[in-house]
Length: 151
Image 1: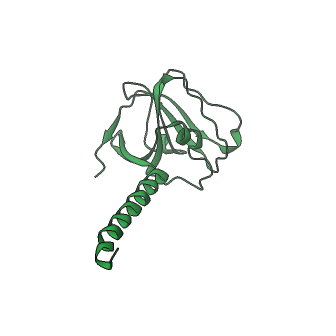
Image 2: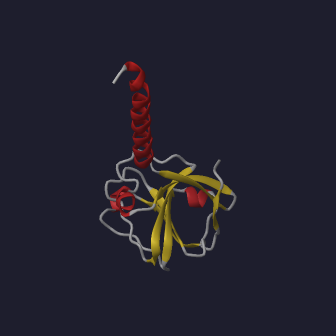
Image 3: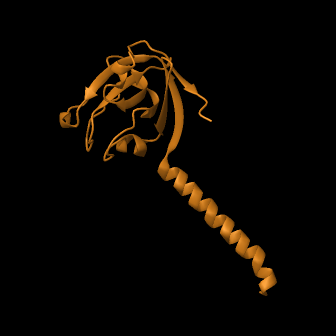
């Protein structure tokens, strides 16, 4: 191939490399959404597959006050949560299929591991937020949770 013919091939290779880079960068950084609860907006990382759900917030140093992790399960259930490899306390909110909070476990400490926490009613979604967030924002059972446009 001559230098002139190499240009389209080089461009194609560069495009594929960049596409693969951004695909894996996106996959590793996770997907995000914004949730609204009682007028408060939270940026949440989505735990929408078994690998992300198993890892959760384990190993992280903290969780900013306006952020959380939102677990999405295929069906409602009594999904258990524990504090394996956690470094900071959290509040856990269980959310039913109607996008209403059905149970809250506040201020769960890392030292509680291996104890598991479960909701009193079936939940299809779970929201983890910094410890004390639910109390500071007067979040109670029955609160509505909405997905909001985060652009």
